[in-house]
Length: 462
Image (cartoon, rainbow, N blue to C red; front, side):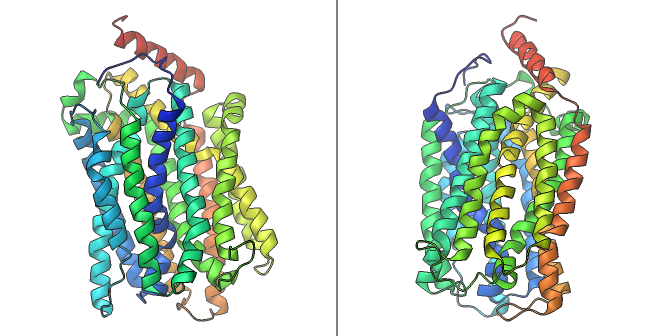
């Protein structure tokens, strides 16, 4: 893997190729995040409390496996690079196990739960094996901070595009094949999305390459690497933010399905606009607004810097989420437009966050003379998935606490609980993450100086 200077300009084809990797990832993982809890309770008939335990245990394993995978990837040496070959090696297992997770075998309750444990654990393992290296690639495709911000935009355009396609296609397909309570409908729908995930990951492999050579210190022990990560203050702040943010995401993604079905009453199917039912329209248009919101990334970054832009967007997004509590559930048009405006504001946030992660990798190399790209991204994914585990576990436990029963009209307590879980609870978490961001120390000027210093070191100038 050849090194390059920080001035490397990437082709649009390579940026698209890299961005499509997150499309592939989300064709399985977004469906899991958004619908798996509802699939387990409403389609397979598992108890919400049992699903909460399953979700937490599987996600904790998922989080634990991230640093291990990061360390393995950091030590990988092939003609294709350090991280890129995992896209080739794991693409097929990822698609296959994604399909098996929604197979819905005809078993009694205990058998279904055991099958869910096995397939969910396997799915989290292959997701880690392909996504940790994929995330780390952003730091090795180019060393230019501006190009990495651009690459991050393409990545999240790819992720949001997957969510748009899922919103447009998934529920119309499921309703046509037998309805949201039919295991067979979910099975065939996931066969389509999992197959696409495999093909697109392979395309990402063939259209990208790694250019930034690793530090010679990469062969040192995990313990030393971990010590330097703990001393990296910008990284520590971002990890705290990540934990809170993904707790929000796990809670809100996990409860959205129940909110739309039982509070907003959108789960009956039937065309509302064009061929789309109202649930599909709600799901599809939000990621469209997220993609559109990416246009704010550059102007917000230019006006305020990455850190301040992220703080502003986080606080505005928090208020928009809490606002759902005050919108009457029968007013679909108001819910629809609030959802779009909230998503538009949130659009630049993931791109800014992942661009900041590459900055803290540079900071670690600049400060400590070590570059452990995959381990840093694995640490980020570890806390993110721990947050997701907490958020998803909270969905199951809170549903049980509020008296949720699948596929029946909900009680007043259950309905109000679902509404709180969709609006107020995640909104408060978002405000908290915005407050923590005030402790992030790096300005954009600091980042540019660090990149310049590192380029000189790599060229032997210092």
